Amino acid sequence: MTTSNLTAFNTYYIMKKTFSLVIALGLALVCSPFVLGSTQNPLFQSSLTFLEAPVPVADSEATTEDEMKPYIEIIPGTDLTFKMIPIRGGTFMMGSPDSEAGRHASEGPQHEVTVQPFWMAQHETTWQHFEQFALKYLRERRGVSDVLTPRERIADAMAAPTPPWGIGSISHDNAGRPGFPASGMSIYAAQVYCKWLTALTGRFYRLPTEAEWEYACRAGSTTAFSFGDDDGDLDDYAWWHLNSGGSSQRVMTRRPNAWGLYDMHGNLSEWVLEQYAVDTYANRLPDAFGAPVRPPITRVGNDDFGHIARGGNCEDDNPENLRSARRLRSVPDWRAQDPQFPQSIWWMTDAPYVGFRVVRPLTPPQTEEEARRYEPDPKIWYDYFERTGRE
Image 1 (cartoon, helix red, strand yellow):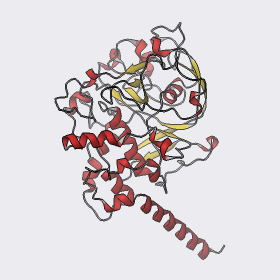
Image 2: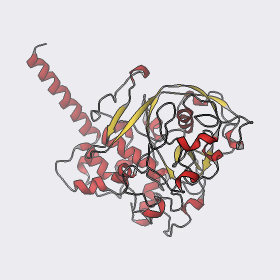
Image 3: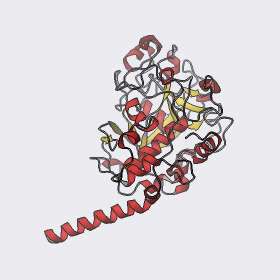
Image 4: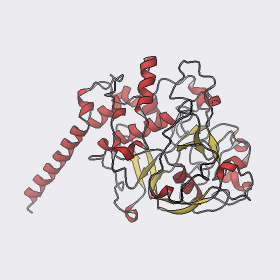
């Protein structure tokens, strides 16, 4: 192929990809990014429609596990980045043995789990990243413009949180401080952030399943902590009450685990997809992890309660709560001081110790039905909007 023909082919290919993206995101092009109270909101679109022609990022593409490399994701429209670490697939024993100090009944019985390869964020999502979505900083900085890309339009149109009731109290007064982990959000807010990030980048981001989280936390270990059984070493790896003063600290300021992941123990407890039950592991089928883990489709009471956060946090004064197998259940007290009615679907007024990190599977969902297992339920937001007139 001649140089001129190759140039023509490349131009055609790029135009074809761009046209496909515009069609996939066409809803965003015809809707004002600030008219949100509708079932036409991008929250109702499958994330699979956002995956065409992803924003180019070095080393971010792979088709096999061996091709996976660490890469630096950037939030388009900003200079904010975060590193994604490749986690090879494998099999491990999930849960804790009867002999482990501090063990809870919900951590057993131990059972073998196979996890497919994925990338995981090197650290917890920080306020600098989360506030671009949650406080609408990125949307407001851009304003209304005719030169927005299709991705920017759909991200700006995405439903976003109402202002938090007392951001200082949900952030240990660390909101806006560079490098501090975002905290006090509901699991729903964390899931919508993942969808917003997917729309901006064209890569499928979501919360980890409980199995993925524990597998990555253990990093090949079989001990109570990723670094061994001796909690005397905890200060080296984790921010907890005795060395944090009960406040979250900058990410990546303790030692990482063997796979290069920071703050898997301590700092913030991290949301995972599953709902808590004391007998979850006892009722699991032997091949339950042969397919993607299905988040709960039946919810009890408020949608944010009964979900699981992992890893322990800066307010924990018991080392046993920071073990790899420990499961923390969200409860209504996490939102006790929210004076609104109905209470916000976005924030936990009394849980400044909960946050999250994102993952990205090597193989994204292949069908919309599969994708819905990981995505936020748009009806939760729509019902809230209808009742309150608030996003």
